[in-house]
Length: 125
Image (cartoon, rainbow, N blue to C red; front, side, top):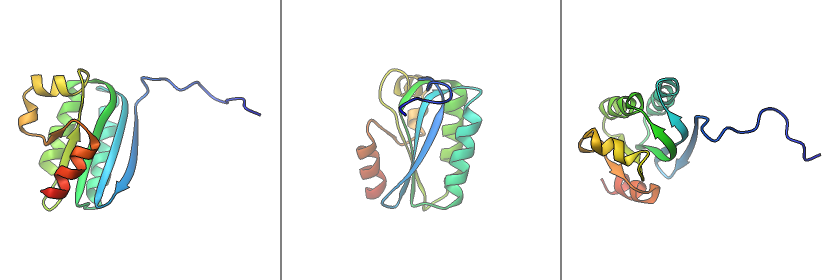
């Protein structure tokens, strides 16, 4: 009892969790979003958008590396989120919000620093 089986959890391992918060679907992304993992994020976003939620929020607060491939996925998702679905991104810190702002895509994305702010933002919109 108490023994762990399998590999220890890699802190940089990519994962996407999904939860429903009121009318919003929240995708909680963790690890590194790079060329290898961004297609998985794109797939998770497509699947979520397919359910036509009132809002889709991609929470990057647990992401420790966001490559340009990941940012491309977010911009594409913003373009594919058709009204009435609202799309928002939570990014806080140097690993996520900084590259988004440096690339200038914060002008395209609804960017929030916390999930609570994003939930308020999409609910108010």
